[in-house]
Image (cartoon, rainbow, N blue to C red):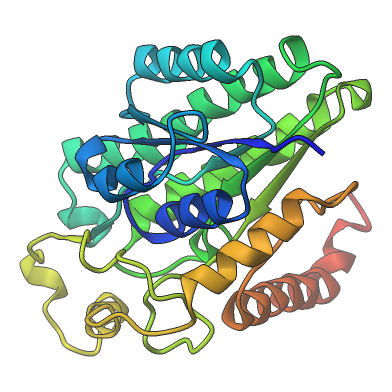
Length: 285
């Protein structure tokens, strides 16, 4: 079996770095994209150019996304799996988040992921022979539930979940393209199933509005939790993601980490309670 060609965004650290290293160890081909290519200089020195292609990419810039996919196809002739991993993370109340910060979160987490998704689908359908591919969307439990202090990040991940659901519904089964959303939790010390990535180190912490300084408010509790990395090994998560990419019929929603599973079950149960309690209100409409 010929090696698979992987296209990874946000490959400098965290899940992106773990997946890049795993792919290379398994003998597959990695197209590793990131804003600072020098961050992968150690891997470039270790692996040959016919197995590792490092490309500068800011997913918020659609022209760079298109150019990166074109470069990958020109070198390897196809792309088999895309890991949509790049993200931007800021901690601050909705009222205390400047518009430019909120908008940049959406440019990276939603619009950037959308640009990558569209290019991936086009390559899977029109370049690969036979057609087909796997699109892995690194989402978050923030795409399922609300977290005080992370309003715009939550909103961007909810949007990504909705986009991915819609893409899955729109694609022709004959294209053999499978998309999976992976709601994960990173660096949440109060949730033991979280993963130790560099999310906290990259976290932008915004000043608090005066109205929100009371220590018992939920956003301040979030601030207290997001202090030190804690949780499961992201390298082990990469192994599960790799295994997921090999499934013939992968799930559309794939929560990874015990905390993510618990959170999603609680969300479903809470919605069901509301439905059951108020279903009769619709009887006479």
